[in-house]
Length: 177
Ligand code: PRP
Image (cartoon, rainbow, N blue to C red; front, top):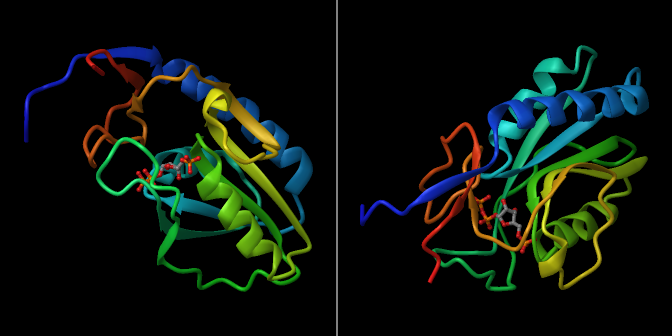
């Protein structure tokens, strides 16, 4: 399991809840009555997705894909793999991709391009956090929770080697050498 790294809360659970409520209002305004398909990118987005859709009180569909870019390291490998693919029909649907973090942008950019080829009626992105200082490819975020600094973040779905996803707050690792 390794030593316990020092964590400091960056975004509290209350701040996350307030951001989720704000995003819910925006998504509701744009998607109510459209039976949208919300597509989460696993694993990181599971908690954000769960909180988001619990407040979206209109018909919608939820699905997940599992993409992987980081492997077991802290840095993106730049190579995106579809580990678990998509089963929903995307053609003609109003698709909203749900992500926990946009960092280099490689993951979501790959996935948006992949989806665009399937001819959805519309395609937008909802991200809880955005780390623009790390961007390698341009990404348009339609619904954004927080812009975050260039620190390694864990909690609320975000991990370090698959640990810390269960933390209710978003924390920074204090001992990043
Ligand atoms: C993380 C995160 C995003 C991606 C963002 O996923 O959930 O999907 O990295 O990084 P990028 O903008 O540099 O591509 P990761 O590949 O670590 O998988 P996980 O969600 O299973 O933790």
